[in-house]
Image (cartoon, rainbow, N blue to C red):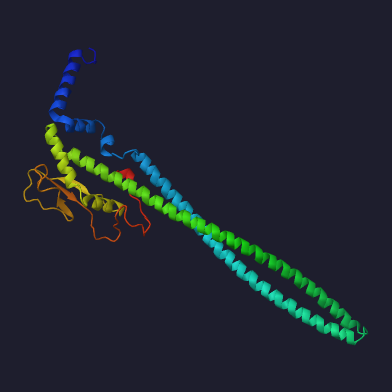
Length: 303
């Protein structure tokens, strides 16, 4: 017997799907679509997919690490060049003093040779030796001056490169922060969309529209900021929890709060659990950037 469905069965299947679609309305179709492709519905990231967001974060982190390494190397180079320049300056000062002393010795010997009327071979020999020593010292001084001048040029270049590396590091930090903000914002969008799918499971088109509006209202205000603060600080992502219908006198966990006690769609049926808002690492996404981000949330697990 063939496994291919009969025409009658196929028509029956399509008929059931149409009836379900009419009965459930747009929200029901979204639920069916979600069940068929949860990856699409669960992560409404706009133009960027989850893989692209992860890649964006990876690239930003890598760039930040690279420029930070460059900045460290350039800073060390400036320190080393500054030390060499100081040593070169000290060597120049020492040689200048030696040249001056040697010139003084030669002047004294020249006077002695003049007084001896050239009759002292020892004085003449000593004078020639001192002049040779002076030439050697002048050559050493010229070399030291050239080295010092080159080190000054190197130091100027190193300082300019260090400043560029510092600016690139700041830019990389901003890009990393922006990439994290994009990721956290995408997580919030996914959380809000999933909340509508989970809470508004069935009903007429009008009922589903009112339910979604109620969910959107309950998620407005400071809840988005609190959600992003939890994720941005590396704490656990806030959770939406459905209450067991059989449970009585439900006691909410710490940092838990009812989703919306005024709405008939959620009253005593759903609650949210946020992170500890008192922890010092908490930060508001899109707020002050006085402190660069050190940790990036693991999108591969939760986004």
